[in-house]
Length: 438
Ligand SMILES: Cc1cc2nc3c(=O)[nH]c(=O)nc-3n(C[C@H](O)[C@H](O)[C@H](O)COP(=O)(O)OP(=O)(O)OC[C@H]3O[C@@H](n4cnc5c(N)ncnc54)[C@H](O)[C@@H]3O)c2cc1C
Image (cartoon, rainbow, N blue to C red; front, side):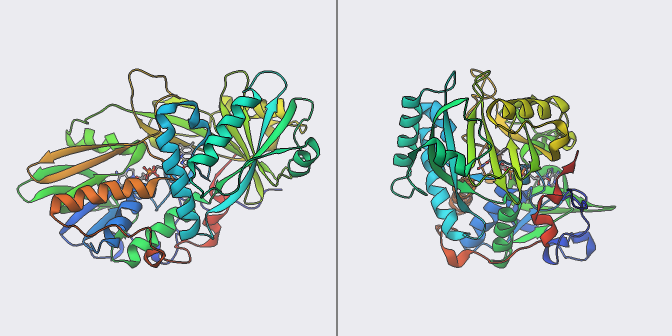
């Protein structure tokens, strides 16, 4: 059933024509840039794209592995407002922003961001009551301000089972259908990277930022690629290294402005279970929402949510997390899954600013940007954020940098003309061969 595994992004030597360049392999690096961005996830390349769309070409992104290989290829692959965040009124604005970005991304990269129908079943016992689900879906449609991907409807059991024949009908008393966006997250990151490059930004892979020191000329960033090291200087630095963000602070004796925490999420890929819609399910035992989704010829199940204190490079799916997801599915599905059904797993970390007043899963997904200032030289660090809303976050940082520099040129990443087409990577990285075998 399983096709021969190909190289994972972390270990790939075959990363595509344009993307295989590290500066140590002959791509020249200038000694000085106006902006250096550390980390080539969706936020790093999104900020480069934002600045390049304002006409700034003097921008460098450094990625220690390959573009998109961190959290940005380990997501649930939804481009969404986040229906479940409506449980917290403080996150309504976050949901509205996500819905706006969803609509925009579906027009800017329509081959990568597509509408997917979802079924939200109403449980016979436990789970959210029907009226509450109805209010949530109404709010979700309303917050999309006329740019919804389709309005929610109530389905008959026959209609629901036609789209999701694996649902165990004895458990549910009814079904809502609504719409959201789905993507290939790695393809999206690499499309944004390609767009940034096309507009003049420089992006180097397999290049690790080892330390940041401030000196008379600005921020000095020590880079390493294999045995070679080089120091580049810049006026502005963005630490977009996500779960790795504080490693470089430790190496550089820089005190972070806030405490960061990593929240691990594991996903499973099993054989195609015949779904033509996603399933939005709530575990009655702990109230957690999880998804069962058709994706790239597989069924994707996730996610778990656990505090993670280990080294970010060592974050892998744990047996108890795999078991948790299988058990949750088996409560709702007529097919009973076992460990043997799991073909691949992948695990990523949400990098969040710690909120001392709330538990882990309540810590807001809304982003936080901190600033270290040395005279007029600035170092920004990103906490939180969503793949869906990366463009808005990138614009916020792009605007802060442009303003500090006295430049009023606007961000234009909402304009189709600023977007590249095609892909930066060979096809084998766009299919699930890139994930861990079990
Ligand atoms: C389980 C899970 C599910 C999610 N699902 C969704 C979803 O469905 N929809 C959604 O909108 N959002 C989702 N998110 C959130 C989204 O995935 C993240 O917000 C986003 O990917 C974060 O991107 P980033 O660029 O900040 O970090 P990353 O993608 O982690 O990028 C950081 C990069 O920095 C690089 N790096 C690290 N150290 C160095 C160094 N020293 N030098 C150079 N480079 C370095 C890393 O290799 C990495 O590529 C999910 C997150 C998780 C964890």
